[in-house]
Image 1 (cartoon, rainbow, N blue to C red):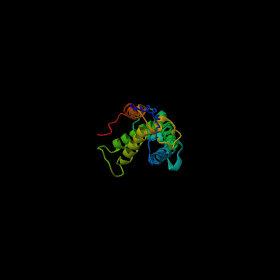
Image 2 (image 1 turned 180 degrees about the horizontal axis):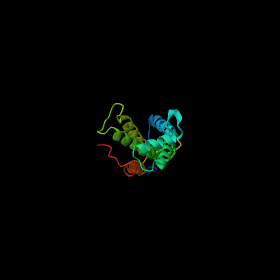
Image 3 (image 1 turned 135 degrees about the vertical axis):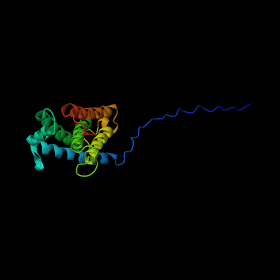
Image 4 (image 1 turned 30 degrees about the vertical axis):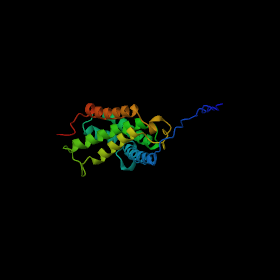
Length: 194
């Protein structure tokens, strides 16, 4: 007689996929530091223009500066620019509505860059009339828009905080377009050549 034993089929192996969050190291802390630094610069400059804090020109002085610089509608632009710079800076510090805050400060710094270029044309990069400061602030604002605020922010639980997508590019485009349009339509001077 033949003794044949048949092995019982193996029990199905149950596998569960567990999603492990990507490790971010110190990225969130770095973004927090960047946001606070850039936000504080814009908040401070905005308050100088808005209410004259820290020996700033105040709204009237800022309006006069815009008018002397060839801007049209300086009374409206002074309020909008000072409020946008102040609010944008405060929101960056908080990490709240970060893409919009970044777009607001980017539009502001584009105009500051153009303003300094008109004063001293020819792409002066260093020295008292250079634009390296404005250039760094502009690229930092763009970086914040593209990376999101990180998790140490009021926006920390929103998708754009750690995985920004198309909205980041849209906010970047809006910030650039707003800055360029404000300059072209309200000033019009060529910032590169006299």
